[in-house]
Image (cartoon, rainbow, N blue to C red):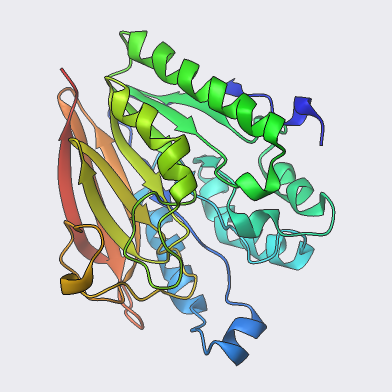
Length: 302
């Protein structure tokens, strides 16, 4: 892969006053090997329910936090993804993705070809920035294993500069950073990413306007706060759910007081004059409709 395919980009995204953003992650279907050897659940009905509820919510933009498919090289898996998001595309919802590890799984570059074919506005870029009203969005690629050192370093330099530029922009009230691998989680299947902690969290905490880091990868909902900044794991799009450590054994204090296995879910983000309203809508296994799951508010930094 050439450097040109990883160079950063700024995407212009139309966003109306009073517009809303939705967030979902880990839409991949459960693979046969997971069902046979790990006895992992298959959640086709719940995934369909989440996507139907997303379409009914009529967001102006949807942030997709990676793992759109189980195997990035699979044309069949991407065709399934196309059917999932078609109602949103038809409604004119802007789809803003980042890469998950499953999206990168392939022999050669076939997986990324499928990914970039679905999102041509990225122009082959794996990290980018955009504006959604008062929100500055910084979309990163946390798949270090799939990036050569030179490209990882390029992203790091770009990330630091982009945060500084957004901090200096008077029209930006708050900054969201998107990564696939969570810096903090109490997951038992996959743990916190030390790489994300080292590479992305320090600059996030130093920035004046950052308010929320969003991630997926762990198939659960979690909410953490560090130095006044919020970190949410939003991995409930339909992949087999991950059990979390019980409350008394948590490595990181989770502000959401939920069970060890959590409902499928997506987020809605509504920016206004004074801050950002964040809501999680959950779907229990076998339930016909989503219901309120969590809600909190983030004030714009002074």
